[in-house]
Length: 461
Image (tube, rainbow, N blue to C red; front, top):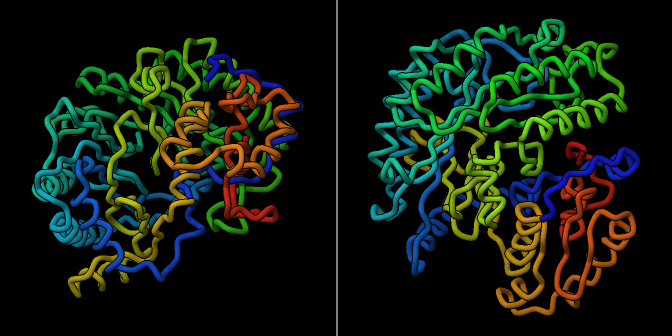
């Protein structure tokens, strides 16, 4: 992958259309309810029997929040009743026990991510209970082999609690900042001070966290180039190891909370591109490496090093440095990837409780990959992680002739080649600097399930 990132406004505008994010292939719309609990159990059993079973990665969904952020499209429960979270934790521990029994105890858990909602809605004592249950069921790897992260709402923790999170075993934190501008914060009902964030980042550094990440969103109501430039300057001064700058997808017809944002406050489409261009220019000038798909990292961060040495991975949490793991999803709506299958849990807490009460897994739907799916997944991962598809490597792994098998995809990519986004040679497809923002568009050419008229996805740039 060529390192330079070139922002070409006319090309960005041309290719900015709805498309999947490819955290999996096939993507979630292909999951179906014919895939049930017995299919998941069979997938887990197959994963234990392979010659070299993969390490385990665990995602835990904590759906609770104390207040509603209007931009949020996540599955969440807004409540001040902490008893609901305590009850949910009990059921979560039950699922952990049932899931843990499916995986060989010689396997080790190397990766953990707590997402939400607001994981720090749980008290540190409750998080301690959760970590103990996870260790008992899935057998934590040695500390130096772990990547244990959680998302932190700066409004919910103190510097002292940050130190306690480190003592619980977490070594990576992601702070949700979104924007420092007071007017933007009010417009999306997420008011937090710059001082809070600065104090917590300092506490994380002092506590010895390996990596501190900050999440930003561009395209929010009332954002201007000048206001977001001020936010970026403050973030750069904090020098987090990683920065995720997400494009806000305003879909009020799909997400009820977004209807609380005043339409007249929304920036015009051309401003979103100005904000993206600004973000890329400011962060790369400050020394951050563009990893891909909204993610930036310092040159000595593990993500940057993995991108450089060709070991970068991609999963449901985005980019990762860890070897390909079997990923277990816990909690409502969680998605897992075990062996050659994907699965997703039920979406409602009542269903979740009922399944577990009956001694069952709360799997609602899923998908088992066929040979063509595995081939296309390899191709799309190579593109998204490395910016290069080596025909010979794919041919050796899947016993195909690349140019014959993907003749239609190569024909679709010719226009992108003519636009200077990529090159197609005798032996490879290589992403060029002007094409690095359009890798989702390139991946779409290899998607056997994508329908041209589909508009269920966020825009690709």
